Length: 212
Image (cartoon, rainbow, N blue to C red; front, side):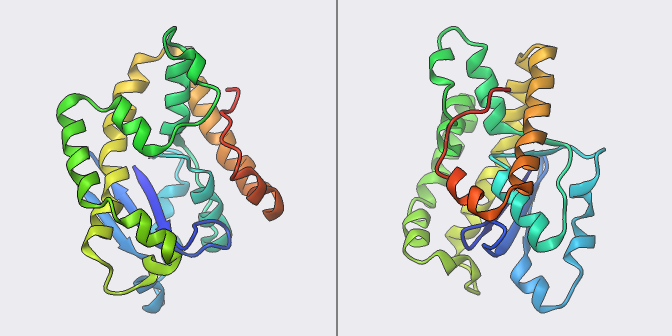
């Protein structure tokens, strides 16, 4: 799983942290520090362009835009859990009516995590509940060094749980819907990455779900 944090992450909003998670580990890469060392960030994250490596992400549009326009990295082979959630709702008689709009990360994790993992998520969410308020007050907080400990914890939450959710939900879908999710994930980041910045800003306010 992959996620980014930064100053209003977009093609013009600086990437400060890149998080990469596996089933067992979460790795946090300090992009601010790596840039200061003049290291080749693009080479370090070449796996993001590797079609043989599946990247699980959540609403990857803005992250894709930032990676391409700031670092020249073109994301491929993406499974977007936000789009996966939309597909799961559209294939459920009980939830189909709620599939018109995209759901946020917190909502998806609360709805999709199984009990034991949900309790763990809620503990971490409580520990980091002030981070959003701090960020809204000062969007440049992700550039501060040393970074607050609760921000490091916050940075792990997305990648820590996305793989678990993606495996559970993806395997419950039919082959037809699995293909729709993969195709929809790829199209979403490509369209966002290739549009002009004025359109991007406008579309950020649009939470309507894609057709798939």
